[in-house]
Image (cartoon, rainbow over all chains, first blue to last red; front, side, top):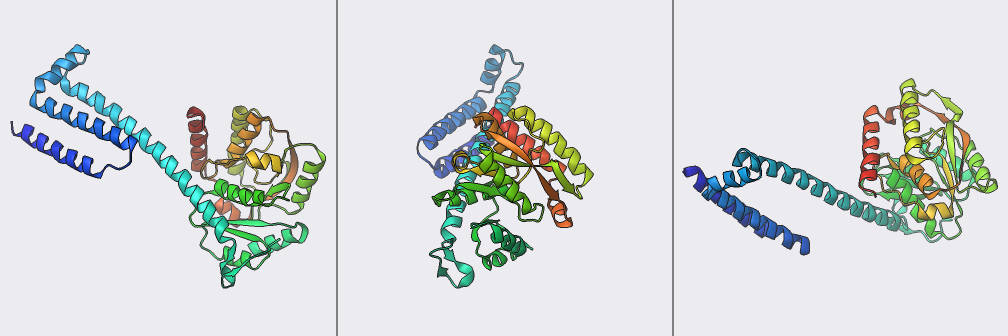
Length: 121
Length: 211
């Protein structure tokens, strides 16, 4: 079926984009591995659609598509949590930087022609 | 207005630190005309972060022993600072908290009172302290307390965070009556009902993730 070719090409495109743009060391490596496995699994599921159904039946789910839906739902929740945690870390970093900058800048009085303050007690 | 407030405080106390949390009005310029130390956040981080920045700066000055947090929007009365510090020095406690319900409120919007009472019940229950006013910006504490205080909660959730820390660290505390007056300016800036949702969410989430 045409849809199979379309899906596989789409997944390969995603794979390349993913591999080329991921950054970071350890976490990045693991992400790449998981990403690769996911795409391989997806390609297999497209080539052997009946297999997905068989796996689904063996775990008590009616259709392959249903199983896929459940897995995707889990993945989305996990993704959201990981994004949230990362955002919080970023916010902490921003706060630290802003604080340091504020304290550093206070040593230069920019409202009076950059005169340096020596003793402001 | 802020310049007047700062100059009045300076009349009675030796060190005033003002934190501008990303405001783009002329506050900074006004403050720079006073002897106060001005710390400017390049971006808006929230009141909790602003307080922590001020505390960090003050802790670097070795001879600062007593810290007082004071809102510059006109809600707080300078006379109350004396009450706070005197109590702190004489009562053997680590932190003194202002309470508008032990003291006075002027022009408090009725809805605000309802919300506040609910917040107080909530905070008392979760933190284990017994306060009549858990969201009062007027506080005084010792250097020892200041050193371990690490405010990390965003937006306005820091009030609950501080109370929580007092409960968990079993710090000695005392409440004193203070006056909170609501002008049109401070009423416009006040906490909305929706913000209570934010604060509750932050507190619950931090408990779940045990941070």
